[in-house]
Image (cartoon, rainbow, N blue to C red; front, side, top):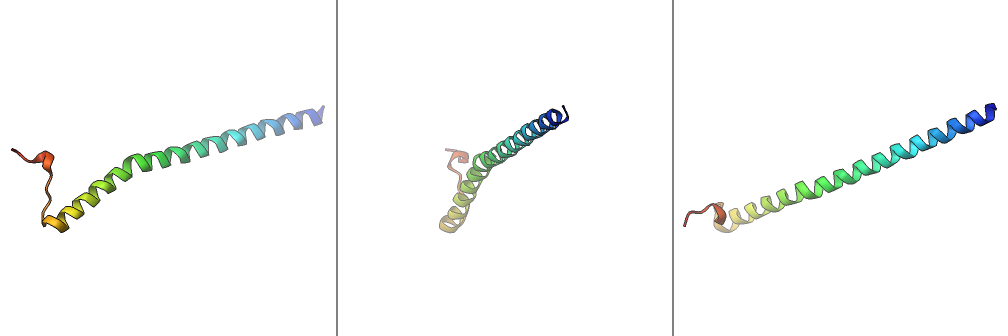
Length: 67
């Protein structure tokens, strides 16, 4: 009977460990997704602004200009 209880405790602890590992990997995937979704467009806009400063000497935003 004691062996059965220890096996059951072991299987529950393995299930908890697998669940925690799954949540950890899911968190890393979400962090990578947020990194790509949020940071990459910001870097593109920053790079675009730097290129404009180097080429034109000022920032030019066509969408903000009044025709």
